[in-house]
Each structure stands twice: as C-alpha cells, then as structure tokens.
Image (cartoon, helix red, strand yellow):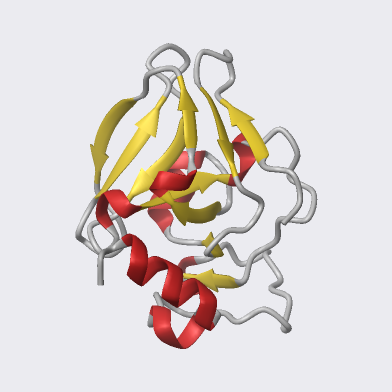
Length: 156
C-alpha cells in the first residue's frame, strides 16, 4: 500500500483520508450518475467505511438510483459537493467515494464499467475492462480479497 489518499469538497470545509487500496472502482454510466455529477459518468472508489477518516460534517441527501433502491449521498453542507454515497446493498459499511474529490487521482482507474446500456454514445470503452449493461454480481467481478474484506465489513 502506498500513502493514503486525501480528498475534499470544493470549499475545503470537509476533508477525508482513505487508504490507497479500494475494494473496487466502478465507472457508472447510469443516467442518475450522469445527472447528479453533471458529467458523462460517475467514478466511485469503494472502500470500507471504517477505513475512511472524515474531518468536517457532511449532510445526507436521499436520492433515487438506477437500481430503484435509492442512495444516500454525503455532501458538504456549505458547497454541496457530493463526496460519497451509501447504497442499500452495502449500507453504512461501504463508502462510494467520488474519485473527482481526491487531491491526486493518479493510478485510479475503473475495474468495471456499469450501466453501460445508458452510457453516452460517444464514449468508447476499453475492451480490457469488464463492462456490464446493468450491474454485476460482486462475487463474480471483484477480486477474492475484496470479497473477503466486504464480507468482514458487513459482519458476514
């Protein structure tokens, strides 16, 4: 493991530190991520919640998601930048940290593209990275050590 990664919102009122070993990195092309980010996709660094150190308070905003189960977005209460999300399947145990909020994004690339059925037409996906029209089964897509780590985080 290299040095932990740090991140922040736009105004700097909320900062965080996370280890440089995500469970997985998803590039999500769903229309919800496109709308929420104002960009072509969302890039999420999945990490156990107990491994993230937060400085500053966040506000929680409940929104819809492509799965239909919703998500809880953690935002800076001042500048409103989305820093992370929690999804029902993994609950409080895993943060989906927004890669764009890291101070240094070098070396972070997706392990998989998801919800590619709704990706923007001009985006050409790397054929070397698995792509799923919707979501995937975690145990089929994630490395074995990440599956073990998330099971531990979930108390299973």
